[in-house]
Amino acid sequence: MNTERVDTDLIIAGGGLAGATLALALSRLVPELKVTVVEAFPLSPEALPEDYQPSYDSRSTALAWGSRLIFDQLGLWPQLSEHATPIRHIHVSDRGRFGATRLHANEHGQDALGYVADNRWMGLCLMRALLDTRVSWQAPAQVEGMKPVAGGVRVDIRKDGAQKELTARCLVIADGGRSGLREKLGFVARTEAYGQNALIANVSTSDSHQFTAYERFTEAGPMALLPHGSPKRPGHQSALVWTLKDEALAETLSLSDEQKCQKLQERFGWRLGRFTHIGQCHHYPLNLTTIDEPARPGVVLVGNAAHALHPVAGQGFNLALRGLMTLVEQFRRAVDEGISIGELSVLGRYQQLHRQDWQQTVQFSDSLIRIFGQPLAPVAAARDAGLVGLDLLPGAKRWFARKAMGTGGRKPLVGSGGSSFEAEKHDR
Image 1 (cartoon, one colour):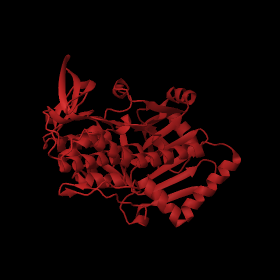
Image 2 (cartoon, one colour):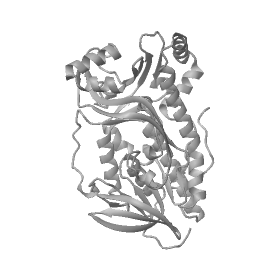
Image 3 (cartoon, one colour):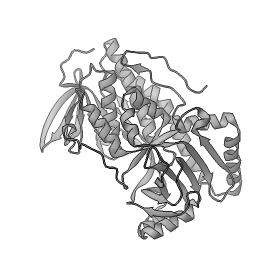
Image 4 (cartoon, one colour):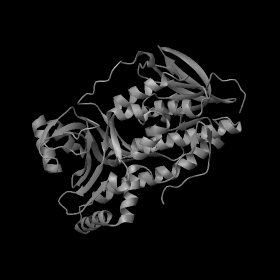
């Protein structure tokens, strides 16, 4: 490895779910590296709350079965699972049509197809785990710039109103797609607007969800309802992702909670009985964002900074997590071979290995939105046939299940006891 002196081996810009997970994975699997996380919010791993009180309005993330396996590898799943609601069934339907597809975890010999976990709980678990590592934190602070230097990069950081510089072998940008840092560093994002907005809220229904996730496509846009609440008992709370065009969003936000429930009832139907309550609503515009070249010498983009997907298929964080583990794999390989982690050969191999996964995931998510967004009768009839075919044909159903569970494609091979770099395929 390059012996030029640096302040830290790796700087991670962003200490959210992606940045904190990367820091934890490196501490577990590449402990030789000195890692520094720069986070804009005043996080302090040493001042964590003693207990966790779930909030009805807490935001949540869908974790695929493949993501559960990653958190298992990092030793975090026993803690995460305490407040992770299992998805044991998935029901996909097209409003006003007869076609539907159903997936069941027991058909695949598993307890769940995926899980729904509160973002705050996931962050708390990650922070608690990071307490026992050598990862250092700069918070509240922001990365404001970067330039190449001998042996790595010099990163400009603003903290407490003062400017400071840290040298590192590599900078990982993990601060999301709206921070502006990637554009400041000259990365070009390709963004395609869906002309829709995501309305996010938690809802209650008169019937129990029975650990079922619903993907419902309507002429006004797709919606998803994910089981939320207790991980042990089937409850009446679900996490809602509701896509609405600008005018419909403004109209919906102006309604009372009772009127919102009525409108939601009209769109979703009665599979969960009557909608009895809707919590605090959040919303944001939906875009498909990709970066053709997310890696350069000494700097690489991950998570939402590298790609943003439509949320209805629940693929975004799971794709990011697989990318993080592929990056960790390449860092492990670089350390073993004595190569600087910021070398383009290292980051370029990460980009090459992760590219196929994100291209296939983008295609899968994007095609769902576009196919189910077509109102033409022949297309609708083809959708019905496709949904019925997925439900009846074992091979097609297995393919769809692998996509939903995040187990299709290459699995990064890296472990604390050594590493292997042969691509393993899971599409048998």
